[in-house]
Image (tube, rainbow, N blue to C red; front, top):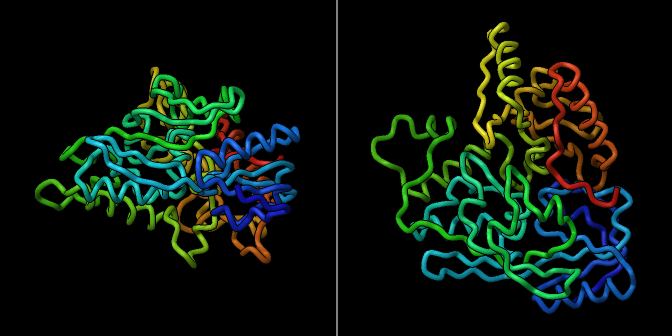
Amino acid sequence: MQLTENQQLAPYTTFGIGGPAWWFAHARSEDDVAEACEWARARSVPVFVLGGGSNVLISDDGFPGLVLHVELMGLAQEGDVLCAAAGESWDDCVELATKAGWAGIECLAGIPGTAGGTPVQNVGAYGQEVASVIERVRVYDIGARKFTELSPADCGFSYRRSRFNSTDRGRFIVTRIDYRLRKNGPPHIVYPDLKKHFGNRTGTPSLPEVADAVRAIRHGKGMLLVEGDPDCRSAGSFFKNPEVTQAVADRIRQHAEERWIPLRVYPSENGFVKLPAAWLIEQAGFAKGYRLGPAGISSKHTLAVVNVGDLRGGATAAQILTLAREIREAVEKKFRISLEMEPEKVGF
């Protein structure tokens, strides 16, 4: 295990924001994971697990403990199961699967971060989510001090949630994920953006073509990490699409129809429906490109809060949260709906 002190965390995040970790460890094997946890236990030091840094907002004061950067590598195909070590780039996993003709994650192309983060957030986009294909998740149980494997039922998946980021936050460290895919399965083309992209095409597009289309769509919305693009200094979607009752959705729809404003509502689970957070934000008065000092809204997509500056003079975490609070208060005042922040706050 390689251990350093006072490691600046901003370079390890897509936001480019974050103060120093008191201690920082590179975990390149499961032995490193266990050793780091024992090191922290012996010193009564809190541990935070960092992967691709694409879904976190780290405090300007940093983290008063040990940040464990998961760098376990390895990709293997075993029958119809793709086995990915937690440190592997998620988009590399999607590319490998789609090029090999394995369906199930093609609509999740272009999502930044590592494979280890996918079960934590139950990553999803364009009608797919990893909960539908995860076979098992190998984890280190910090409290029990042992490695174990969890089934999908054990993971407690729901919309953008799992036991890893809710009831058991901080208990487990993901080291490997097995995804059961479908050989030569048809691509999943249900969302309007994808249907529009392939609207004039005859015949079914291939899995790599669908993955490339998703990347192109994400790029157009500033949701694809592209070096030099200021809209990429973000954590992707900053707010979750709120799940509401049908009655609440009907109230919002009536508001939209009275003003001749198009509104799409998406089905969810247990009788709830999802409203597009971007639409709510725009109708609350926040346009693309809105700025509050060095914090702003993407010029391509209202759902992305961005660090307009750079590592030398960009936004602070406090400034990002000030803008987020302004957005939430405006949406709540106009629609009586509370938006939930998607990135995890660290060190606050």
